[in-house]
Length: 75
Image 1 (tube, one colour):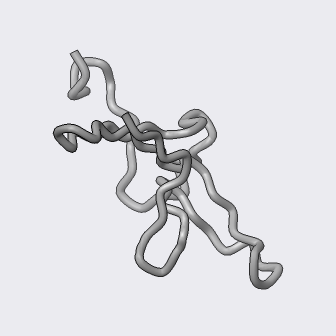
Image 2 (image 1 turned 180 degrees about the vertical axis):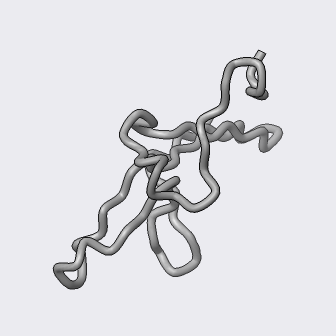
């Protein structure tokens, strides 16, 4: 099993649910809901987990909405 504490894209940027320019130059990004991964090295099965999901500012993400339990994909 491989654990990746921080996922990055091809530009070496953090992959997260919410990323916003902090307005204070390079390195001032506001990052919420950073993704982490667990990967099976035998078969490649991958699980993604979100760090501190309660800190994701839903109201600032276009199209995002909180689902009621009845509308949720979780069982």
